[in-house]
Amino acid sequence: MFPASHAGAAPDPVIKVNGLKHTYDGKKYALKGVDFEVRKGEVFGLLGKNGAGKSTLIKILTTLIRASEGSVSILGMDPSKDGTSIRKRIGVVQQDESFDFTTVQGNFDVYGVLWGVPAAERAKRREELLKKFGLDEIRKKRAFDLSGGQKRRVQVARELIHDVDVLFLDEPTVGLDVIMRRQLLDFVKAEVGRGLTVVFTTHNLEEADYLCDRVAVIDEGKILVMDTVDNLKNLYRGKRAIEVTVESSGAERFYPRLAEALGGRGSVKRGEGSAVILSDSPKDALATILAVARETDSQIEWLNVRKDTLEDVFIDSVSKEGNN
Image 1 (cartoon, one colour):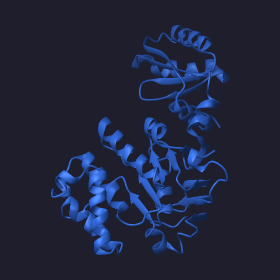
Image 2 (tube, helix red, strand yellow; image 1 turned 30 degrees about the vertical axis):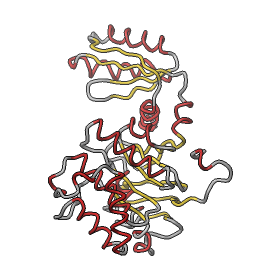
Image 3 (cartoon, one colour; image 1 turned 180 degrees about the vertical axis):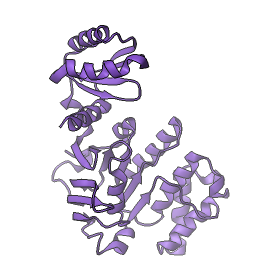
Image 4 (cartoon, one colour; image 1 turned 90 degrees about the vertical axis):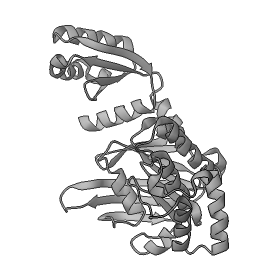
């Protein structure tokens, strides 16, 4: 299932990935056989915690490194052979900042020159992007003097100075506050509405829910589950997430015993000093939590039941993988 704009026959994929594996040292694999496709005008999310393999995958897709095994097609081209041609048609925003020693306006001009955009067209696009991304008032400021949110907007906007078919965003909102994150995502949404295809990596579940058409949950180099956001949520409809925190003194007794007591009636995912249980029988799960707290002499500090979210899909997927 794809975005509404693709009603009818599905367009050909602009990205195809089959059996992709990668190792940096010949021993441990960062990617362990990844398969997916991305279609034109789609926002495809790669959702996973740090170290899951997201950045390695983006580096392969953007021709920065060559995969150890498997095949990749970007806009009908092979990154291992057609790197230059691919780079002319994609935009990439990495996690780390990368700026030239010039002004905001100068950054657009430098990128336009690098991509061979004619001077008149470069000036026209620069002005359009400065206005569209709310950068016109700071156009003469040095890029290094900008706030975090302003820098991210420049990083995204300048990638659009040339004809971009696919935009890769690798954790683009890291370090931004809530308002700046939402503004940046809204800018991206507007470009998608004009036909841009986006591959978006994040460990922020709210962002993926807000922006993506489809999401692939990736962990330890493997895709665990992949579908539209709505379909993923529907898979878990009726379940409830129960959040529980116990005093640190009883944590090592409580959480392992709780997982054992729940058995197959709920998945337990531990975080820092807490746990989330996903269950379709919250009353039974609550009773088990209280019984285990008494049994292990653990003091409950927080107990909450909430509806299912994309976070719960992620928690359940990773929990199941960890139990295999």
